[in-house]
Structure formats: structure tokens, C-alpha cells
Length: 107
Image: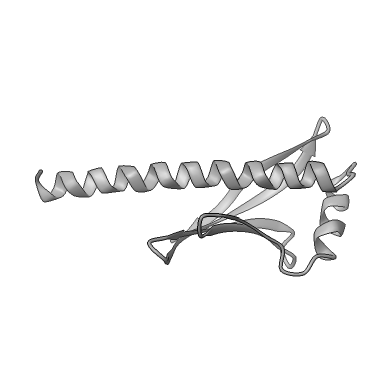
């Protein structure tokens, strides 16, 4: 395989890993919220997480946590034992269900 093809091949695996990680972490977060918090509004979610210390949910070495200063969730990807990417998610409650939207990311 040519080196440029190998690079594309490796990038494809990295994207698949990120998608799997994102899906797993957001699903685990949703399960935690639905099982632990009685919420009517975003304020109920905020109040719950403000009372927790160092809340994190892990998938392999990557994790999602609540950023208290900005009232958002941040997903940190750790690939090959190195920080790879961070995504910021705002959240809202729509028709009784949590919805997440990626508002920012950085490498």
C-alpha cells in the first residue's frame, strides 16, 4: 500500500473509533441522566451536575464531563494515550427528552 493510501486508511479507522466513542459516551450520559435525575427543564440538569464533584463517564480512555462554568458537556477523546480532540455539547430538553448538539470542537 502506498503511504498516502495508508494514511487515508488509518484516518478512516480513527474516524470510526471517534464515532463509536461519541455514540457510546452520549448514550451512557443519557442513561445516567434518565436514571438519576427527575428533570422538567435544563435548570434541573444544571443544578444536579453543579452538586457533583469531578463527574466523568469513561469509554476506554476517552470521557465526557460536565463543564460547570459554561453549563455544557465536554467530550475528550484520548487516542493512543494522547489527547486527540475535544467536543463541546450544549443540551436542551425537547418533548421530555434530552437533545445534544455539538457547538465546538478542537484538536
